[in-house]
Image 1 (cartoon, one colour):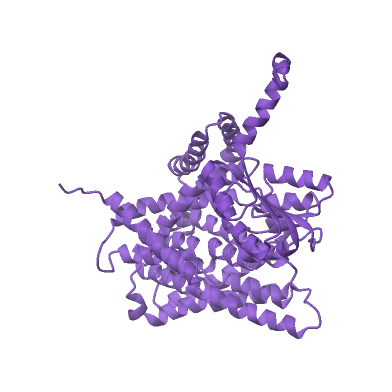
Image 2 (spheres, rainbow, N blue to C red; image 1 turned 90 degrees about the horizontal axis):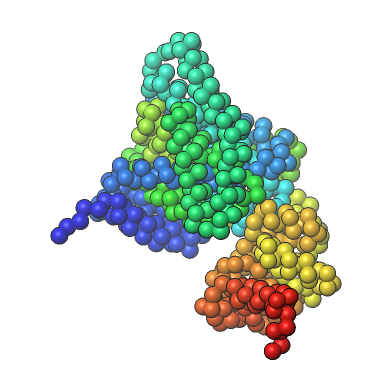
Length: 560
């Protein structure tokens, strides 16, 4: 009996290949996105062997777009943008203009229309959030001035792309493929109607949504049912995206972005963590579906346009960014770091190119050039940073003292040198442990991966290193060789186990404590070198039992 299950086939083959090739890309020190795109190419119609259902892939990619944009909204920070607004806002706008003009020039050379050239140029102008943040994190730059400028710059790029996604459909409706010459009244009328719909949607979300959505999530969180909370987060993301498209005619992307942005408050951390696995899975499927659309033969048949696209992304954009940053008086190291971090394109470029093709305002060849440029630039980006790192290391070694242009990756109080305790994680458990240790005069520092929690730790006066404790360079910065105690307050036993094994190998004499949520996690942590592992549920049960036995009705039973 044969089973015609194209959806299961797409999910199984696509995810397995994405996992294998994503892991291989990571081993080669490339972004896993490269592996996901190659997986899509292998299951696409332009390569031999298994061919996945393209229509189903596009449906799944739409869900991926919604959840990606929801994640962008969750992490959107007005404060981060305002901190660097004087360089990030004008810099990003000028750089987008330059990249769009270069893309339009290449499109004109290829004989495309003006609108096609503008869409193509816009797709080349925006960097990948995933790739940029990974590069910043690997070099411990996210909390430096350079890192904050790069992140603020990226926020402005994302906002410009959101606006572009809103305005492209009415432009396509009025101008078609770009050959017609519509009247000014027709164009302005269509744009005015679109802006009116968007304004209505934004007002509804700001007046009603900003109160109703957090209220609803707070009520669901109060039920104590994790699956219901996760379901409510996904229902809000997908429901707002679908409703905004049906009722207001705006894109799924804009609806999802606003849904995430309105959750950017007290519940955003829980919403982000609970929806992360599904967002990651559909993000992978999005990249796989994008890879399915790519015809590798363009690398052979049109090498000059591919090379020109690659140079616009890696050279044209970067030179524009470098010139802008230097013009604002920032040092060379800052300008080079920002230029290198922007020398690639990714998820927004794919969304924009896909929308352009579906609206017939970008030829399929344009999408292939965008995909080729993305693949090549993502592959080249780590190499660009290697060259930059070596150049900056040479500059520092030639100087008499470390350059003030390269601040350390932490801020706030100085990190202790020896005899200190390291608290990994500054959530509810870690922050309480840190408070108790400080009250007893123990010198300590905090390692925290989350931006907001790291900021809170610094605001509370703790020396803080931001990053994942499982990364060797992050833990090395906390000087574990001189530490006497490490407390793993993070709830992820597998991640903690890897860090504990490295700590134990580097400093056999230190005391290492960890938290666990099951007996198997306790065994795992002890096997990796922990001196003790606290089973949270068991300790909670003991504490509650002690409190119960201290209550008046049972006080006489204690000690019997």
